[in-house]
Length: 504
Image (cartoon, rainbow, N blue to C red):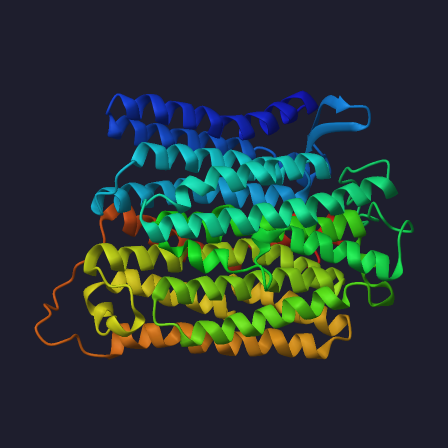
């Protein structure tokens, strides 16, 4: 693929979802729901195809790029495809297809209103997520980060109820305030230290040096790091995490978008990208620079896991699980070793597949049985064996058991903690896995090993096929990513300072 063809693939991947949103609006207004849904899938497939076409050149060391005209001297927008961004783009564009299929079954099975608006905003959110993935500098990343926030706000408030509106205000309030008060300030501070705000490096086995390496140190550097970390509110670090469980009033496809496809993954991706490209792994390892961030992430992992244990609402329990698992990625970045950074990058993919499956199952349970509480799930595994079988597989992946993808990301995270000499952090990872057994496996036990309530028919009643197919597919992908984790390793190795092929 020529450089021009690579740039075309980059731009078309970002623009295709915008075209999808336009087509959804037109077809929806004409009342042709089937054509609208088919258009969504076609655009999703085309977008994923464009993103996937960049794998070969990036693996070969190319960095497809496109520079846009400067907004003002020294302040321009641009895109560049590097391995970490490509992985996030593959996750977002690939899961968009499955979430759309699931959404058709859920929205129709639940007779949701405003479906055209829903799928329009969903497409806009994917375009914003791909803009974040391919952002070539901090300014471009910030612009698309804000677009993602505002394009997902109508999805959070989709139900139109008082609870949904309240959740939307909290969502918008926390994410906008953190990005303006902290993230924008951090970017402006960085611009005073470096003339270049671009993400560069990570070629030929050498990890990026970092924009700020040698330009700031000590307490000032630690403060700037924390401004970036808390400025990325979508990473849901405590205490700026409350928007995530509050947003669970939205329909389940939105929960999947928030937790696996775009929003929170955009948050932790941004934290990891800033750690690698703005600070650099070597700089973070100096003089305990990232110690505060390390402890904030560790506390979030532990506290969110404990909170998940106490919740009876299934989606709320999964939401706090997400808060805990997101901080695995932040902690991996803060540990500042190549192995930990690799584990953090892998966890973007592994957690996405496991968690989207769990939320898909939660929605299927609601559509079939109208149940939302863990305590109400007794015996449902016999009525919905495929659905709860997928839940069991995804739970094992989140816990980190082989032969499922989550085992690899947790292996590298624990190994990275040991390499850094942080045995306490390694223990946090392992304790969190035990706690995840405590809040996930009782659901499986209830579903399969407890009797149905008296008077409930025990005949099988799975979710509609459009919902069941994505559930089984994402569960299967948890196995696939275990087998092919070496390919993910080879993709990410150049930006982690690791040798390609040594993780196969």
